[in-house]
Length: 384
Image (cartoon, rainbow, N blue to C red):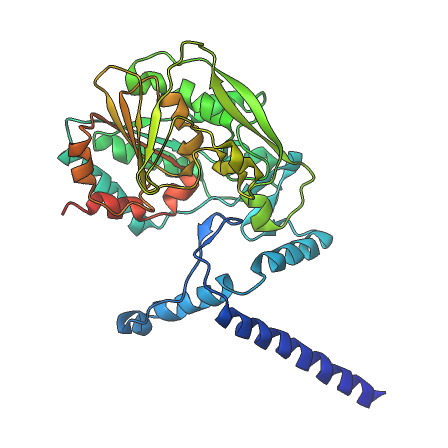
């Protein structure tokens, strides 16, 4: 009996090692993936060797991330782990919590103090260099903040409100006007679904509410009226894929159409694909896994929107993906909108401001992305 158990243990051990070795061998022949649509983040590709990074440990850390990110079948492993965790009552997987009312909520980011200070300094320097431009910063709160009552009672997230208060105080001293939509969101949250249950973005209802509560500060104009239309009822977003949790409820995706029949269309020029269109909503993308790309497609480095407005205002919108569902609401207020995503834009911003005759600047980010990102300070600091 003992010999039989020993033999079985050896067989299981050999099988386990064979699986691990097989996955590593398979990984050699599979090209590295640069991004994960399921997790909405960049993946670690094979790192370049640098002596300085080897000596300070960064190379080893990148290799660990590379092994974790590029393992074949990664998404399936996440789902299996989530199913096992749910069986034993685990509330968190891969940074996502199972919350009340069928919500999946991403953990709130705690910013690195040094990185945030450098970003604030870059913003201050940018505002000083362009003191004649009218600048605003709209930092969208996340679901874990506004809907915190839905979180498990044992979960204590970072104090995003304090982070936002401190950041807004900093940029206001630099001459950038904060636009704070938190009170409007708190007031509306019982009547409006502001965030997707399965995705980290705000809904189009949330984006529209943000527009109505910010356009006056941005332009002095009254908000235009739009009517919502449901275009997809079975959306499962990034938090569903990232966590592997099955929350039992799919999301609806809405697009907003102008209520005014005299609404005049804009023309969008995508510089990376050299394509031109008058459609903000790419309905064919509703069939894709990441159906949120219905809002403008993938994340483009830069594109311009020529509107029918005859005024002089030309907006530079520096943003993350939260802005994608917000942008269509702006088109009746500016003559031109230049959209830049610092994560993918590597050209000179100073030249762009001059060539497009920019008069206004809006920074639009969600707080979670912003407090964990360093691409903005890099772009703003590039003055050569």
